[in-house]
Image 1 (spheres, helix red, strand yellow):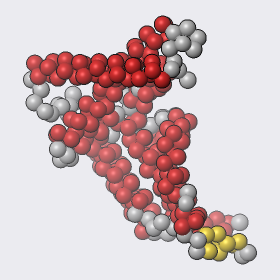
Image 2 (cartoon, one colour):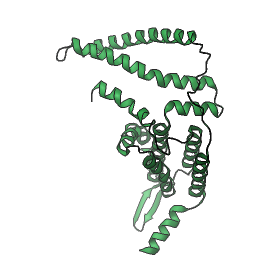
Image 3 (cartoon, one colour):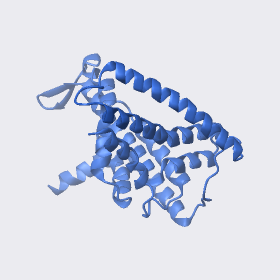
Image 4 (tube, one colour):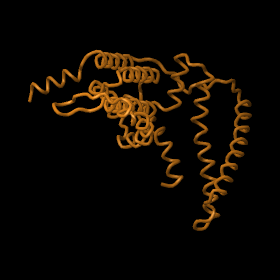
Length: 268
């Protein structure tokens, strides 16, 4: 995949956030708070818990379906950062060798259960965080953080980081295109050329940052980024929050998976 394709792929998640669905029209504060509660509920389970985590997939699946977000796109993003979770838990079977009987005649080390629990928690949390951005937009999340009391300096830094990430990518794309036009075959692709490109990008970044800063000061910037629209809590937001909180409480403190298993066992 070329650099241009990778660049346009970065903004696809942001473009998804401007769709017109029920989830997209919810108040950003509601989606942020419910997502945070979901993350806290998932990570609060013990390290050996696996089966009890499965009901929590209902929340990201509903966001994915109602928000009309492509499943394959989210899975690719999750798979991109999955090596971090694998690296964290891959040694658990060796560090926790206590044998646990799974089935008659089948025993596994307890480390395998903690490893699977880490992977499930990683899949739930990362996919839900991506769906929050895909249904709210990163600026919307930042403004929601500001409205619930997060310091404006921290929120402004997040907004600048997100906004000028695309500016930096555009500058990099121009440099790489110029390099490609001046290189023939494999010429101009060595380490020396790469170091020069990085240095040139650094200098251009400093110059652009100074121009942007002076332009913002001339327009009255005082350290806070105002929102373009005023958000207000509606009845749909309250109903969504109550439903999510009720399900999270049920999944966390009630053995839903065990009850469903016994129900299925009774049917078959």
